[in-house]
Amino acid sequence: EAGVVQSPRYKIIEKKQPVAFWCNPISGHNTLYWYLQNLGQGPELLIRYENEEAVDDSQLPKDRFSAERLKGVDSTLKIQPAELGDSAVYLCASSHRGDTQYFGPGTRLTVL
Amino acid sequence: GENVEQHPSTLSVQEGDSAVIKCTYSDSASNYFPWYKQELGKRPQLIIDIRSNVGEKKDQRIAVTLNKTAKHFSLHITETQPEDSAVYFCAAFQNGANNLFFGTGTRLTVIP
Image (cartoon, rainbow over all chains, first blue to last red; front, top):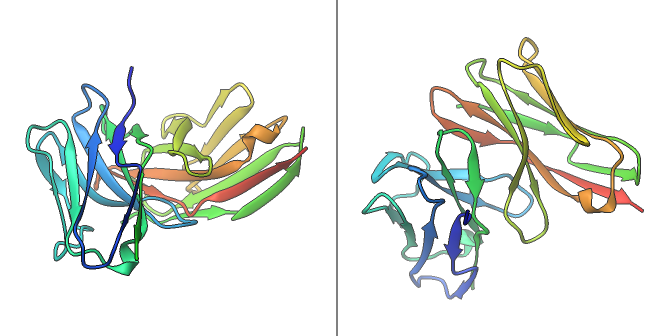
């Protein structure tokens, strides 16, 4: 069984540029999560999807961050415009039961 | 929301010795407690989990204990090996929010 797939693995951009991350969850997993992981810290939830519905986006900075999961399968997280402080690893995870979560490899974003 | 505290932040042990990492949580409604291992530059990998109806669970050299009354849970690794070196994260699934809340991580170093 394929795991959670994310791309790109690494992204370097200049500040004020837009950036997008893509995630394909494990087949059959209806719950998808986007997390932010700063260096030396645990993952912090940005948004959770149940199928195509964003059921918890309370921690998503909506002035610059957006996400979509149009068909309830893969998802895209976007930042526009990026700021220096957005440099981090963006992790995607998926779940079938709603608690046991499996993570993708993450996208390491560097904003210069 | 849920608050998860994890100790110690760093832990060094000699190969073959045991390692113990402890976490506490604040919300008595939390009912699922996974542990993740994250090697440098890689995804968090689920290594063991425990649900609130169980006090202890073991998988080969890894065990987890849960004390619901005291609201703490621990990871025990016996006969440590150099490949156990990584950052370990505990997490608590808060039933109301339906989200995982992570500890700040423990960097384990196993000295050959």
